[in-house]
Amino acid sequence: MLHFCTLFNSKYYAKGVAMHHSLTRVCAEFHLYIFAFDEASYRLLTVEPLAHTTVIPLAAFEHDALLQVKPGRSMAEYCWTCTPFTVKYCLEKFGLSACTYLDADLFFYKDPSVLIAEMGGRSVLITPHNYSAGYDVSATAGIYCVQFVTFKNTPDGWRVLNWWADACLQWCYARYEDGKMGDQKYLDSWPFMFKGVHICKNKYAGAAPWNANNYLPGETGEIIFFHYHDLQYLSNGSWYLGGYDIPGAILNELYRPYIELLKSIARIAGTVDTLNTTDAGTFSILGAKYKTGIYRLDLLAASKNFIDALFFIKRRRHYKNNFLN
Image (cartoon, rainbow, N blue to C red; front, side):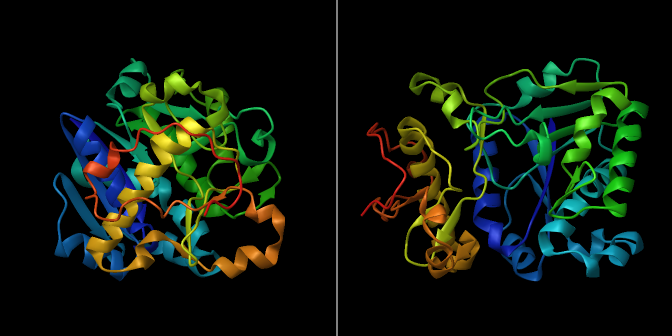
């Protein structure tokens, strides 16, 4: 059985539920430990429990060391600080042999067990950003992405995990400073500092907007998981895709059904806030730079249920990066 953990608050609820839904479709056996980072997300997750999950409220997870740094960090920074501690909690509390941290905005299209199998006898798995030309920010954001990180319950695994947790407690901020950036830039040093660290070699792991141009149209069906980074629902009904140039095949075959799924989950939850809603005016006043990558993706039939929505879009028209009406 595969054991995963993730964390999110109510603004990421739809994405977290979508990720869980994707795991149910591709994994033979899995369990997902969800750390609910606000009362609203905990309530939503416990009123309608998801199969194969354990929900951990923030109060049960936080400890003195985390609470001491919490006031000086933003919500995003505090979530990053907590990331290694969610894995530690699962390994210790539930006695797991291994646990994989997942970002809540991942969506799985194939069984990720092939990635964990690729580790062999190694104890830690990290996935590269694999930036495409024009988007490489490895120097400031890191070579590797904290999106899918596996730790085995071994001495080598604990060495890396404890070091990461201590480092994040000391410094974890949303800026580049002295070779550090959030919880992520720390991963750059792991292959050199520690034994047992495996760098994922599967090109279909960690598909994301920053590397979408690396995939040919016929390869979308091979993607193991896609990272829907910085996807935001704007109050005017548009969706912000992070300012990246998304190829038409990925836009139509991945983004469109994923967005319809998010909308369906939000409807079931009864609140649009679970879509990570952003005021459209925020983007318009910031200038044309932020208009890049904004699409009118609310044109799909709202009557489609959230399971069928995953697969019913097969059109392959290419859309340029502007507003579509």
